Image (cartoon, rainbow, N blue to C red; front, side):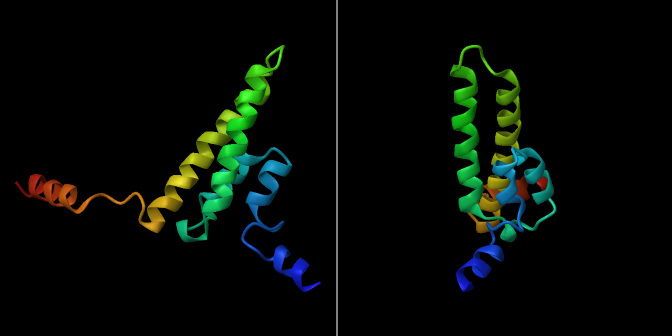
Length: 112
């Protein structure tokens, strides 16, 4: 029971949009809802997994005959939202911060 309760309350459990995104094919909607979350509340691992998931299913939708354009569009839109969320998470973790030299050059040009 304790492990179920831990899963229920975990950052990737059924109370989160990351859980229901791929389950209900609502990854796009889930990503939009997550825009209200601060970057430190985003699960980097789950967002990366959703990006891989969407990429695989975009390929599937393109390769089947006849092509499934609706599935392709759904996963392409989901991929864009999830990549944006992944970039927000990475910036929050300090992975995508500007280099110190670039900041100094920007500040110099603005002050002149």
